[in-house]
Image 1: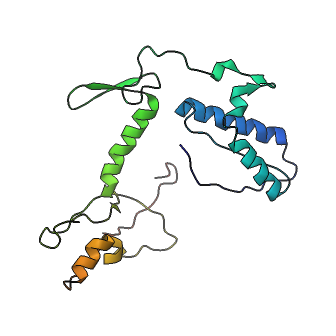
Image 2: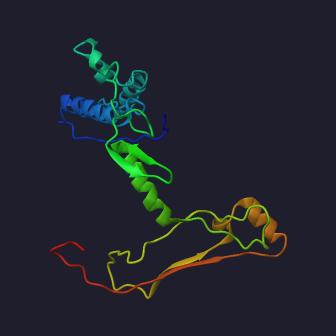
Length: 209
């Protein structure tokens, strides 16, 4: 897996480079244990931004080097993983830890796959995939995905809350370009109301709720 994101962090001048090196090794070890080496992180540091960038590019070409090499020699402990007695039924890479009841049979999950499944269950409640009325559009009937708030969601405000929050969703944000242009050609511009009523409440300091 490869990602295009990056970040630049400025640390105090007195920061020990050995501390950064240990942090880098810990991050690589964490990702190795979580993904089996499929995901890795590259970190470069130096006194100038240009030098740090050059070191970053060098480390990108040596993924997992802090694990695969130790004291200038190869580290055989990370060359391969021990055979699994009961591998995960989902990924097959990590030991199965918990059995989840499926539609037809029970499925053994590792810790990572179990976390992903539980997150997916929550996302199905938070993300709404709405549809247009079929008489409006015969092909692209789905609206864009919308993140919804759970009932009872709470937010802190710096002043007395408003009676309601939210706005109407315009066709540009609601529909795909093809569906919107097709409807506009017929003089139809659908909007969706996305408002939530606000009820004042007092946060309990001792519990943080």
